Amino acid sequence: MKNDKDIISVPADISTIIEGEIEKAKAKLLIIDPLSAFMHGDPNKDSDVRKALTPLAEMAQRTGVAVVVVRHFNKNVDTRALYRGGGSIGIIGAARSALAVAQHPNDDELRVLVPQKANLSKKAQSLSYTIVTAENGAARIEWRGTVNLNADELLHVNQGEVARAKAWIADKLKDGPVLSTEIEAAAMEASISESTLKRAN
Image 1: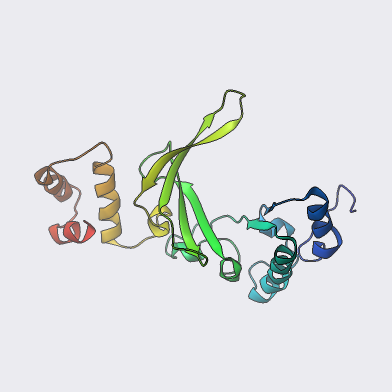
Image 2: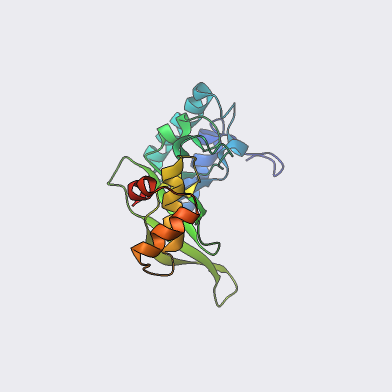
């Protein structure tokens, strides 16, 4: 076992420490949060990512443990959501499933869990949720239903005028139905053309 001050390293400590601890605890879930803090090598290089994640996937296969890798988003809004995660694209390439979590674009109280990749099943719908305080004082997730947002929309990826119009419409309708004539008039004031409005519907 390493000294308490030492940081577990992936992949160096997979067979010597991590796998043994999983078996000892009969663990079903391993969370690496964030991957960049524990990965040996450069997380921005595909070759280093493969060297780290291939042994991790092999260990998951041997032990039956589910592995969740956490990474944070960069600030490049001109890049599709698939490429917004920190590190190499090889990280999401190695995953069987990928989920993004971010604040709802039109509601500060809500967060959204949206599928980015699903190799094992059909992509599920995006789910909104809020974090509330349970009776024992702990944080608790309270699901608020499905939302019609994809990862690019959730992460404010710059997709031009249609994307801006879609976000604007969602905001206008968040409290319930609005007459189309009112929407059209308000869109003109917001400098959204009639053709863009139609494409965004």
